[in-house]
Image 1 (tube, rainbow, N blue to C red):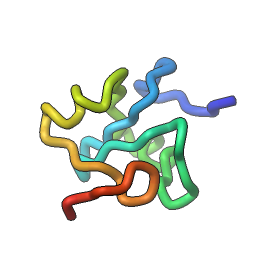
Image 2 (cartoon, rainbow, N blue to C red):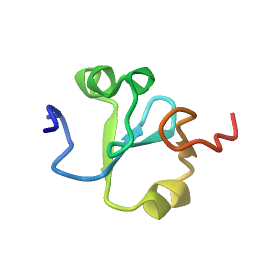
Image 3 (cartoon, rainbow, N blue to C red):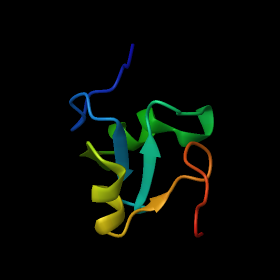
Image 4 (cartoon, rainbow, N blue to C red):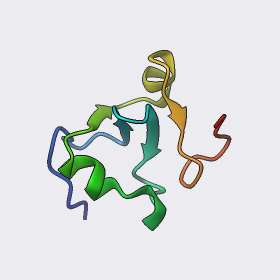
Length: 69
């Protein structure tokens, strides 16, 4: 069960508006720090990874891999 609030409403992907990094909530690790992203108000929900990529978000190294950073 997900514990997220913020702007998230059941979406699979969470973008961090501060770092422009996108996370896969179905593959989240402790290193992703999703709760901290949401508490800081930096969460941007996405239903599709392609939507985040089209807006310039990079993959999280931990949950998606292939980060370009």
